[in-house]
Image (cartoon, rainbow, N blue to C red; front, side, top):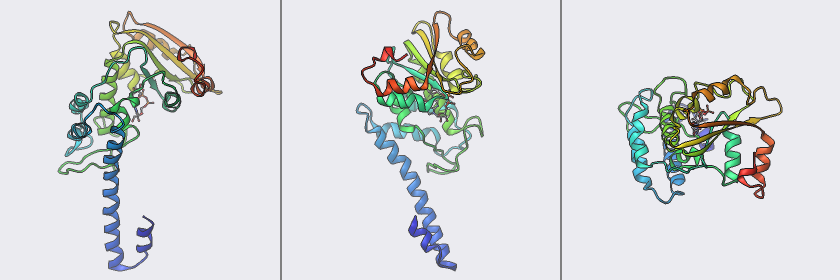
Amino acid sequence: MGLCKKLLIGDGITALITLILCLSLGLTVVSRNITSTFFSRCEKFNEYDCKKVWDAFQQAYVNKDPCKVPVEAYDPLIAAAPFKPQCNRMMFWSKTKDVVHGFTEKRDCFVTLEDTLLGSVLDGLTWCGKEGSKDTNTTGCPGWSDCENNTVRSFWIRASAAFADVACGNVTAMLNGSINTPFNPTSIFASVEVPRFIASRVKNLNVVMVIQKNNISNCTDPSLKNLRQSIDTGITFSCKDVSESRIQECGSKPEIACGACW
Ligand code: N1C
């Protein structure tokens, strides 16, 4: 893009032509990027046909108004890359993404949605389509709360639901002790995942409350009472305050057994 900047200093028609060239170059680079990110991340998983998964992904949003992609639009994508239950190892989280992944990247103790094929290929990406177009855009897409049925949010709701549907055994969730309402009813964790934990599959829900120096909440927070009350009867509940530094220590010391971290 440095070259584009230099050429733009020209004047009149040359500048205009360069501008158009550079813009279209930029745009193709952008949409080629999501394709290549998707495929390079997907190819790390052996047991899936990435082309099939990509096609199922695209059919959810291509040629659609980016605010009119319902959660069900991703059903074929989930069917193309179903989640496998990993009993006693599944980790959920809300507002603790960095701490959770800082830990799961280093230790093979838990599996998060981002460790699965679908969660990993789309993690951190923005995408949407446009009515009357075959393109995938990665800019100018509606933000998380701009409209209800937006392309990216519908995906995370659908994928989180499917991931929670296969939860089994001991389930762990990391919540954030540095915010007012660690169990927030508007979060995906509260509204989509917790209601799908069923007693016939899930034995315990173990909350790890991540405590930083200036924490304002802990396991005694009233929102945790709501969590305890909203889980299916028959699932036992526990909550433990754990300092962020302990989680980091456990991440960097493989000699500490997974079960002894907290
Ligand atoms: O709304 P949240 O948290 O409670 O959602 C987190 C919850 C986790 O347990 C995951 O299983 O829902 C699942 N999930 C993701 O795995 C995920 N990866 C990336 C939900 N959202 C996910 N993202 C992005 O994080 C998403 O694009 C949105 O911006 C946030 C939501 O996270 P949150 O509010 O901290």
